[in-house]
Structures are given as C-alpha cells and as structure tokens.
Amino acid sequence: MKREILCQACIEKMRKLFPSDNPYPGEHIKRVIGKARQDFECDNCGQPVATGDECMCFSIYKDGGYLEWEYVFIDYERPLKGKYRFIGDNSWVLEI
Image (cartoon, one colour):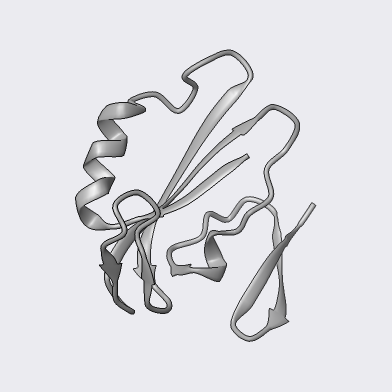
C-alpha cells in the first residue's frame, strides 16, 4: 500500500497521472479530499500544508482489503458504509 498527503497544487497533477480508480487489474486508488487537521508537508513536493488547508489523502492498494487512515490527518465527510467506533482524540475506526 502507498499513502500520501498532497497539497492543493499536487492534487491535479495526481489526477492526471492516475485518471482511473482501477489502473490495473487488482490495483485500486482512493482519493479523499478534506481539510488538514494539523500542519505538515506535501509528500509529493514538500510544500507546507497548514491546518485547515484543503488537501488530499491519496492511496494505492491491492485487492484484499483497505485500512482507512485518512481520518487521522484530515477532516472530511465520511461515507456511511460500515460502522464507525470512536476511539478518542477525535479518532474513529471502521468496524469490519
């Protein structure tokens, strides 16, 4: 699995580089756009991303399941698939 947090400028670059959510058989891409929960640097270009800035969590993974991680770094509208359990520090986990 590959996971990156991308700044506004790199979001469009990544969309052009990976236009499909299923680039190859058995490979999947997940993009989640939200607001940064803390300050950090873009994993692609190194530019600062400030708390509250719009950014994207970008994941590439294979068949066999996906472990959500985006909620740790960004605030976003969660899909209502599955059941979420609050685990403290404003963190939620999806119960499978």
